[in-house]
Length: 219
Figure 1: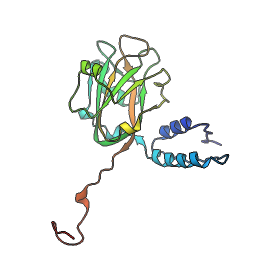
Figure 2: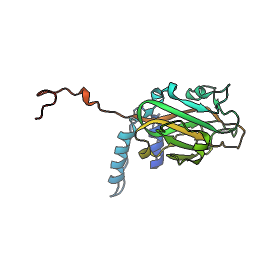
Figure 3: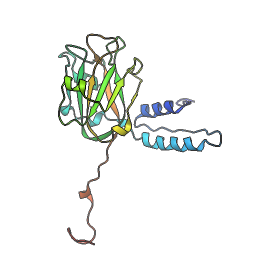
Figure 4: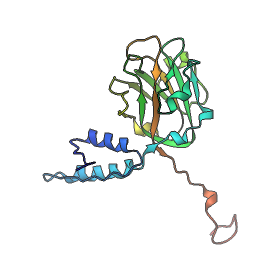
């Protein structure tokens, strides 16, 4: 049947749900054995949590973004769209990218695409909610929120990189320090990247109307 895929394990299940983004996913679970109910319930919870995940590019505040060591010819904006353009570093292989969001978000995974000629990104340090911009020296010595070691398969167009979800629950900005590339080339190229997750639904108490009494009265 067209559109139906058999999933053999949880890793494949998570990858497929992340790839679906905000599209509807229908899953049929086949249980075997007396202990099958536990993973089935866990999978149902996972399904309903992850189906809300979406591509967060519409929530990126481009005016608040920054990229250090970008080349003049192939700048940062190129890697925010899916076309033949790309972001390329300038004087060496390193890049320091800050992505700002227009509201707090939760990050579940990301896509980080690069070419297969050795210039694709390899080692990346991620920082969130920095109070100010950092420089390359500070990025080198600072402990990241998460460190990524990407393989050539991780930067292919159909790949998704899982993040430590519990560490990315209330994110206003992400700083990405690209330390090196796949082939120790002179410059690094990023063809596209985006984050997958969901906006934080903040409750504004001012939206609630008082039903009884006046402001300041106790009940």
